[in-house]
Image (cartoon, rainbow, N blue to C red; front, top):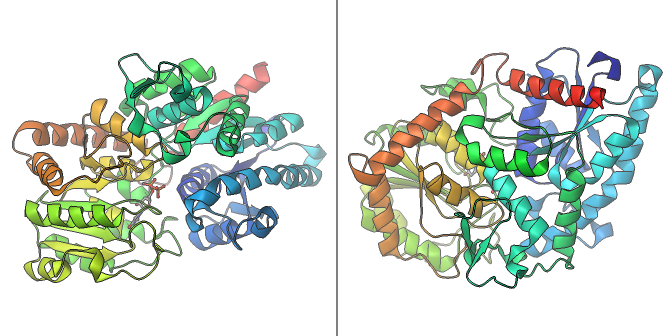
Length: 503
Ligand code: UDP
């Protein structure tokens, strides 16, 4: 690898769910001496990363690309999907393409400073930044695409955008995705709102199709998953991307990879509470509450870093939880249509709900943000009602915790189906994104099914989740140690670099 220089540039998309796995990847790479690792992003995202990188990652450099959101018709300081209303996300995506020119300049500046004008060893870019593949190739760097989600979700999402199967003349209620076996039928509810209007000429599909197609020109592909847990997803990606594809996951906080879980290990890692997130409860209080509950008795409910549910779904969920009689921790946010970081109003829940749940100790209501991994790794936690974002799914499964799926969009709608039908560790409350509310009866029935670990489906799901948890933890060669995971990434880099050398 030496002859090409040792600088590795990482270029994540402008969303927290992408920045964090890229940062984890950077952390693994920096454990190997001899590499200079630089993460490149826009000013506000760099600020966020700066506050997130702790003193144990001194060798991760950050480089800013100039970007002014208002120049693109976006609100001020809109550099991350988290601060945007959904209709503005495509605008941010289009605006992100303008980063190509300053990125190219940065790469040339780096080369000017290098001995003999050497190019970076490789540029690892997000699938949403396909333009970076051309930059890498033009200077002779190895170009690697990194998708931060699982293999099945990545394959389904990309296949959808490349083929737009809902435009096919046979499409009625179900559609097929060309890369998947015929037995995999997708329901019209598995078109997220953006996809429903996608016809190939609208702004959103033009962006997705171009960036994915450009990414297919890279020398290799990395996925945040574990080979053993996603055989079908990996097979599909390898067959259709026609590129070397490597599973380098799990990119998870180190503590998630240890069992039994030790909360002290959280102190020093780069995931320190995702900087900027205000915990709605102290970690100690949460653990104290969980300590009072029986083993595997608690249902944890959370919908990721930027989602919430409708007001009527919130009401129905509250009724279903109370009716189930099971202990629960619920991360509450204002419903859709309101500022999700704003104040929570009592009227969004059944009358007296919070008081009843608190007094009876059936429920712990956490506002805005909970220490998720600490909750999932506690022995009292028995299931996770989740939107099936990939980080949440991996975190849950790494702790052997089965999932109840309520997907909300993006590749979550494929993740939850895969978790249910391929892995057998999930029961969906609904398939895809339903326009109807999931009623309290369905919620109670599914909770009962999943939380009953003594018989039937609940027992089976628990068994499978425990096996998959073991496979996830085993995927790091030195779990929790200095070298954790880095060998997988290095093996992949070696592979990709030799592909380029042989070309
Ligand atoms: N998370 C958390 N506390 C919360 C909600 C979310 O720590 O109250 C973290 C969670 O542990 C995960 C991330 O936020 O690492 C959510 O990522 P995911 O991919 O599941 O969903 P996204 O936010 O990208 O939709």
